[in-house]
Length: 274
Image 1: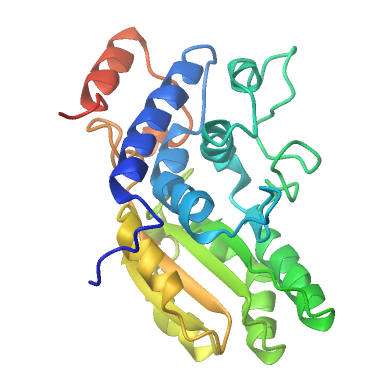
Image 2: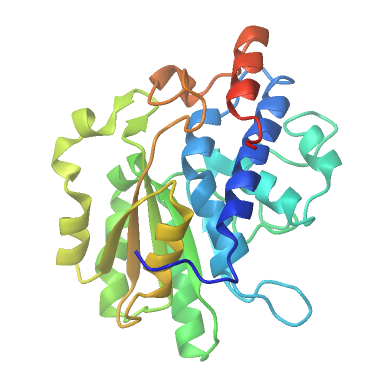
């Protein structure tokens, strides 16, 4: 793999992701349950998008669009937006509390949030519509969508998978957080015919890359070197609960908060490295 360009600092991203995982765990202590597993599996993807791939205008605002279609992973997006100082620490401190404004799923109108999501299967369609607008009006903008693999069971996803290449939406870039776990079991067991995901997307006319979804350099390289001749899909092989040994690839951490002992162990595992 080619070296990552200097404008994206890989070591800084790795440190941020450890810090954001600790932040999310701290927030989870105030709640009975939180989507920790799915947030940890997509964190490197979201961080790489905001800190490496998405372009900014001279006034500092992002020129490109981001949609978190897997809205239950919103705490990952909120943590990144806090790092960027788009959201305030007070916002995350009051996450899902009556006094706060951040809910379980993203709501359009909040700082940094482009689309209200959470009903799975809608994000790719919204992203396709935005990319079509930009194509018609010649807007220089890329639309990025992050989805879950369980979300690929929704028919509305495949409507846009079919339509995007026909409309030549070459500024539409989608990521699937392929952690192979959903709320009720392993995706490969509940829907084995979904696999291999890449072959199906290619057959619809998408350009597709398969990467380690926790390797920021691989994510950045895949998107940066795409041909730009077709909509682009990145299949990110990830681990649910990534970064905490007892959470990794465990169904119970789809929606749960750690107890005091679990919290302490997780914080030790996520400590900054020398």
